[in-house]
Length: 293
Image (cartoon, rainbow, N blue to C red):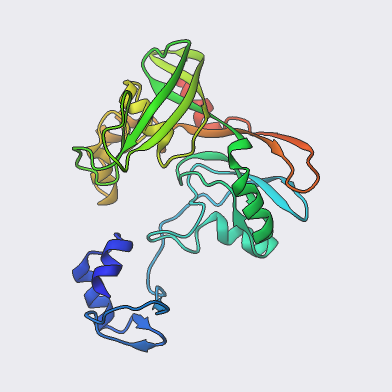
C-alpha cells in the first residue's frame, strides 16, 4: 500500500506514508492496516486529513453563465480547480459544490491561472461535452518575456522527464516524435501587444495537454512572466515549496502568480445546440503588471 500511495500521491514520501499508516490515519476498507499490505481490485483507502492546514487561497469567482445543464465561471489566479495534493476544502470544486450541488469539470486550469472554467451538472452532459471537447474553442491571454513574433503556430510534442530540478516540468519540441509516450501538441499564438520588454500574447489551444501553453512558451524562448517552474529561473519553484523565496525571487517573477488568463470559451450548448461565447476580462494583477512596465 505504501508504494501505491507514494507513487500516486507524491506530496508525501514513501516513508511519510508508512508513518501515516502506522498512526492509523490511513484506513483500508474501514480498518487500520499495515503499510506492506498488498492492494487488490476494489480496496478502498481513506485518509484522515483533519489535522492538515491548507494554504490560503483567493476564493473569488464569478458565475458567467448557468442553467440546468452547464455552468461557466471565471476564477481567481490563486484557486485550485479540484482537490489535489494539500488542497481539498480550498478549491473551486468545493465552493461550487456548496452552491450548485454535484458538478463535473469539462475543462480545468492551473491554480495560478485565472479565468474561465466550464462545468457540467450531470455525468451525461459531462460525457457529451468531453466527447465534443475538440469543438470547444479555448483562448488564453499570456504575458511573456521578450519580443514575441506577430504569429506562431507551435506544432510538435510535449515530453516528460526533462533534465530539470523540477520533476513535473515538461518540454516542447518540434520535428519527429522521439518517445512513444510523448504527446502531440498544437498551440496557435498571436501577438496582441508589447510593453517594456514584455509581450502580450493570445494562445488558442488545438490540443489540451498538461502545462501545454507554459511549456511551449518556455521552450520557444518566451517564458511566462511569474511562472515559478517555466519562468526565467526554475529553482524559484524549489524555494517556493519550501516557503523560502527571497526578495530577489519575487523581483524576478514580477507578479505573485503566473501571468496566464483563460480569456475566452466558445462552444455549442450540449442540449440546445445554441452557440455560446464567454469572455473574461483581464484581472487586476495582470493589468497592473502591464501598467508598471
